[in-house]
Amino acid sequence: MIPFQEAKNIVNGHLFQLKHEKVSLSESANRILSEDVVATMPSPQFDNSAMDGFAVRSEDTIGASKENPITLKMVSVSSAGSPSDIEIGPGECAQCMTGAAIPKGADAIVMVEESSGFSDDESVQIFLEASPGKHIRKQGEEISEGDLLIHKGAKISPSEIGTCATFGYGELTVFQKPKVAIFGTGNELIEPGNPLESGQIYNSNLYVFSDLAEKAGAEVIMRDVIQDDKESLRHFLSEALEACDVVISSGGVSMGRYDYVRDVFMELGVEEHFWKVAQKPGKPLFFGTGQNTLIFGLPGNPVSSYIGFMEWVWPALETMMGKTESKPLSGILTESFSRESIKKRFLFGKAWIENGQLVSKPATKVGSHMLTSSLEANCILSADPGETILNKGDEICVNILPWKKIV
Image 1 (spheres, rainbow, N blue to C red):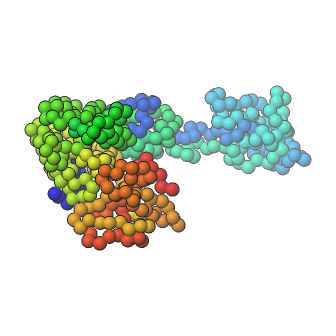
Image 2 (image 1 turned 180 degrees about the vertical axis):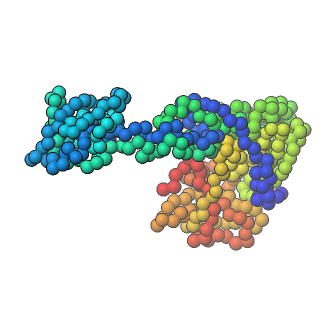
Image 3 (image 1 turned 60 degrees about the vertical axis):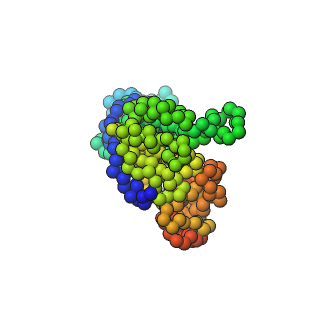
């Protein structure tokens, strides 16, 4: 059994980034950018109207009011998408729609509500004195050409997709998705939906792993429950080590009579870096490497495997896709938290903001088999080894589950 931080350093020393690939904008959601995205043009591209109204020379509207309207000659119409070669002179104006280019000579927009309105007449009455620049979106006021829009390593959300579309990106360069194999072992595992017989349990871990892997941005290409049989296990792992970037097991790495996983890994040439970590839950944690593959052997108990995935596999997947590992926050306990003398301690928990401060409390169910402890959780709480408990008011590390919110 090795200390938690030593194990972390070992894993971090073997992480690698995946190659890049181009994907269409429509298929880029939730991918990780492998290149900075820069502005291909200024935004706005040209001076344009923020309102439906009339483009005017502000000096021609001096003194205008409803009681004393000023009449201007209406010479043209500028609409969004139309050529921007319209020009107005003294005493003239042009109808100008939202988003349309500002005619040459104009320096303000008078909203249609502040005029006699749109019509086919050759003149229009202006009821408001306009100031220079009024209701005009100036070229480049938001973004200049060449400005950095989105940093490499950003996860692509609707905001990134919309921004990239605005600047004409039909394709984006992203990190490849890690290809993942997930498997569980045990004759007792039965798929949900089937009747249970004596001594059997439902397979839940692979469903959790699959969802977590996809949430992290990976692609699960192999998934299976394997009976307690070394040959079946060897066949699955041989293929997984060839095809996948990451292999994740649930169970089979403890010291039970049929815990074959670690032995088969060794037979297939996997280099073992550690097998047991000073942490609770999840001490029987295996980490090894193949030629181009990371291997994580997580315990079979559902809480141990869930927390183990989030603390070990999730950050590895993000690093492979070029994303910086997020750091835990510091919160204040509202209830006590039991520490371990030599092990790092993890528990599901609930975190929220109270009086402007992040506070948290651990789940009341602490058994490594009690998966329902995760139902109300939005974080994982952790504490370094210590001889005493952490009391109400003490600080604790709070790792917010990425798909959850702090309220």
